[in-house]
Image (cartoon, rainbow, N blue to C red; front, side):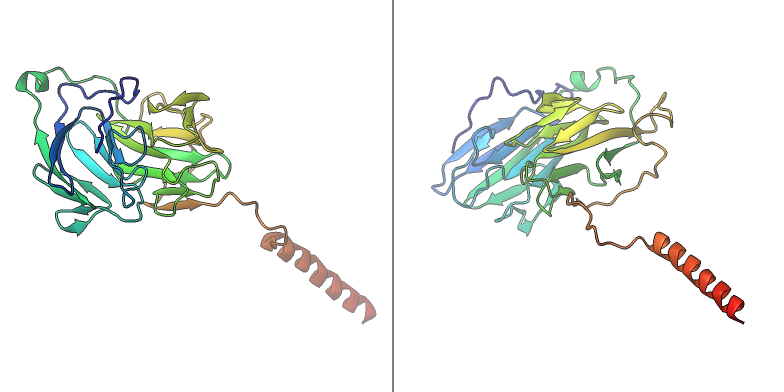
Length: 283
């Protein structure tokens, strides 16, 4: 078990007023180690770059994400083959509490949550406006996607909340969530990374009309309920903002032999009218 230090990790350290989380890890031999999760997102897996690196055939490259949203922590199974057991039940996306017990074969991890100090909690809240919600517009297809889970997974696997058949995209490529009521995106140690407004990003706060590139797919960000966001912007705000928990986008071109029903019906009407006219002339 390794917990490498990542001084250049651009995922921000948690502010003092956020809830603090630690994991008490117990390995197969019974040895225990406490790991403090000081950043907004903590990854556990076998891949170098994970805060908690567990090398075992049952552990996926990036197996678990602990997403600290400031007031609560969400645990997310990153579409793994062997899964995660939380308090005796298989989990996918759960808010965690103190003394919760993870079983990630063959390790156990007990959750320790610590409330921030009172003086930190009394700090003045941000006066920046916060959106009522977020939608992503898939630029190639025009589809409007509104994530409904608190942590939205984007990747090529079908278990992701937004699944895209893009060969340049990782199994789970990025996480989209709110931190202190504002949307952010975080790269999941992907091979090809992600771009926000054509600039590489590992963790980035998102603003209205930002363009996010993941693999070969581009999304335009639309923040709902924000002031000074007009309906004439380039983000397609005239579209109805809807979406489901799980959305699959296939990037394969449409088959050329598909029939355009409207066009076919129109041509048939002209043929029928022409037949009637010829019948009248013969009569």
